[in-house]
Length: 349
Image (spheres, rainbow, N blue to C red):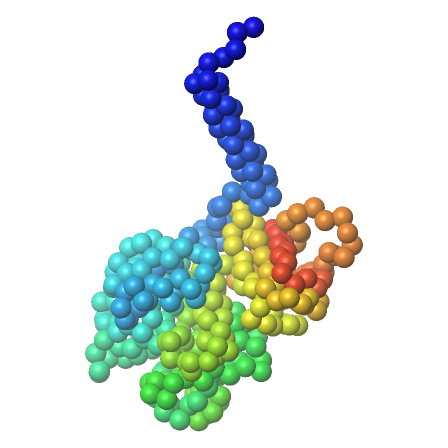
């Protein structure tokens, strides 16, 4: 048998290697697809979950993009625009306005966008003209007033917006921050001091035209420069964006630590993946989460993303009530991760 020439032999080796790599990639993609499914978004009675978030923020563009990317992580793709018209034109399904002035034309655009089913988030925004009504008043009819003696934001009750803040936490704002409050007694977020209960709302959400509108009294960057304060404010914003985008949000109810990273990403037409990562060296206790599905649902099936034969990975999930259910999972070892699938059944029209 003739020995193959070295160039031809080398070419065959390269071809074989490429084929093996291609086969491995195909197998990996197939396995990944079978595990969490294709990345699609489910519809809610004709209104789809937001495919991305368009952000309009004051300040230097590059710095704003850096802060918002770090704040929202991989929750959903971000697009940054200089004005409201450009943000709406992106077609994301949700827009977030951070500290920008809003004029009459912008209000009309936002009202129309929300009426079409879009989500609008207002963070420390103000009217574009000194004599104009506050944007929240113009868009939702909620009265807004100055509260110069207000000190910190706290949680009042349960809900999609309050889910970002633990009951014992307070978020204190910088001294020179312009403080306003909404006249909304039933709001989930309140100013902790210096205002009356009837007019002390620091956060509000509603559906004035069929879409979703959420408001926070101050910008996220207006909090004290303490790690715990910034982390708490970031969670409030995450909870707000999840509600606006009709994405699930996991609220920790039994244990909370900066070392426990919790995330939810879409994993199929009706599937989301809840991932837990313990960055600490020690194991967590048993973990419980109140999962806000943020959309009308008939129920949810929970499962592990990998096959686990050991009973130590058993979990418990309650029935869905008002779009919320509680998931209890075993302790998570230090330096380890675990993921759960959330298969959501749409509510019958």
